[in-house]
Image (cartoon, rainbow, N blue to C red; front, side, top):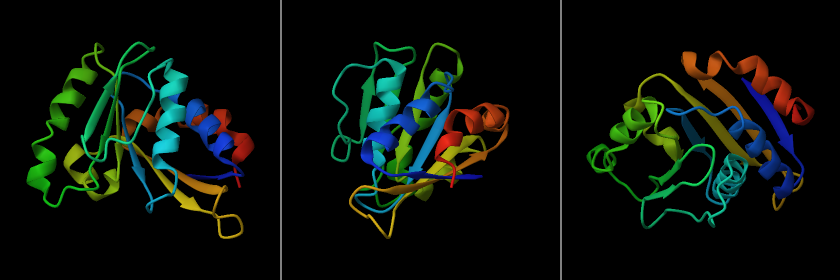
Length: 167
């Protein structure tokens, strides 16, 4: 686990980009944090670093936005409004991950994913975003934790790419 301190939305965007550059087809990235903690802003930075030029917006009401045109496709999911695990299952996220795992797919990034992470198995990167007490409008703490072998194998590279923000 590594804790990063972002002094601004721009830095959070840059941190997301550094992580995205290490992403592979089939990766699952779980974003956690309170409302307004910067999950969608992080997703924008992640998509930008993949080379996606379409505007990235929160999929709160559509539940899934898929973007292509970059190094990897990105499936941006928001499970905030879902009340039951069966509703999450209806999103067919397992199929998105299987497709992504073939090498032909992309990355699945799930906002509020900590609530349903167990249904995805034991291989994902969890990023918990928290507003900083001293500057809650701008600064964030990002607690990054690999779960399973997929990201653990890239952990040293990830640490080097975001090390300047370690706190």
